[in-house]
Image (tube, rainbow, N blue to C red; front, side):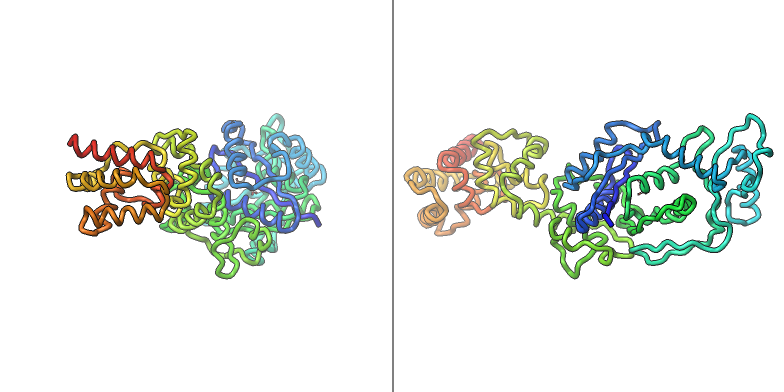
Length: 471
Ligand code: GLU
């Protein structure tokens, strides 16, 4: 059997991180089994539909690197086929026309509620003949659900899940305006697309029992189901905006790398021993239903951040530079030129260890891509008449240094400390850090000087002297 999994998002204008995990698991299961992973846009809500909302989903999948094997299909475009199936069920007596008005249905529900019964359609039109039909009255088509016994969904994550058939009333498959319902459309599309495995959130488990009524009525083989536990926020409720970023795009904007997001989402609902760092390639090799956790998991932003820090260190520097470019603009208002780009590339190893997100990395990158003429409060504390004397000594020594590399730079700073700062290296390095970076924190300074190069280092020291002399 060819494994075909699907991701059928409703385009809402954003891709929730929970949906991204569903997409990831479908992708991994398909790739693990040399199968196919297909996309279907569930766009039947025409009032809210927009092409931009579809683009958001495709962009999110592309950013995560979850490549799919079809041109995304539109559920709405398949409407005639859904109607055809409803008609077929009607013709075969497996579905029927129901002429109840909305008011009548409301009365039915109210009286059931007041009698303490399960609120359900009372099957009024289930066994009536066409001759009973009122003239010129709109009708819906309902499918006949089993009246007694129970149904079982053999779920690959939850095991056998059972429900009393009494709870499944005769649901509507075609509305009175002739449009198919979501329940019908999903089943028909899944069947027509040859979906072998339906992997989705366990909030759909109730739907599965209802959808299976349609499979049975059509005599179609059901897919294998795997219902994934929910992702929760801190307090235990659904993960929402108040917890932080929730959409794929928000995580991207917050400076996360796609491989970190994928790794985190994978671990948030699937495990392989104690492995924490799992690349997508390894995940494809290892992914199975056995590893899926049965209970809901809490989204832990700190854990995601530490995975992101790991992947930033692992990332190729040129790629990081490319990813960083928009963040340099938005965070520190810098556009790179040839000099600053190559400097930043050379300094990347030193700064990437200090950043957990691309936002932080942009701030770390400042020392390599802006002029330093302004100093924060902490830096200013280091800039005084004593340090001006040290700076002047340093300038003299540095000018004559031909080998502008880590070890000779260190030796030179030590000599300067011996001559001008009671042999205390810190008394040279702290003001020097302030002069070179404009602040009190930086990557290892000799390495930074090497990356800045002689000319830029001398300029920055001179700027600091000018600043001291002016103030
Ligand atoms: N369109 C549904 C959603 O976005 C998915 C339904 C399904 O997986 O069957 O939740």
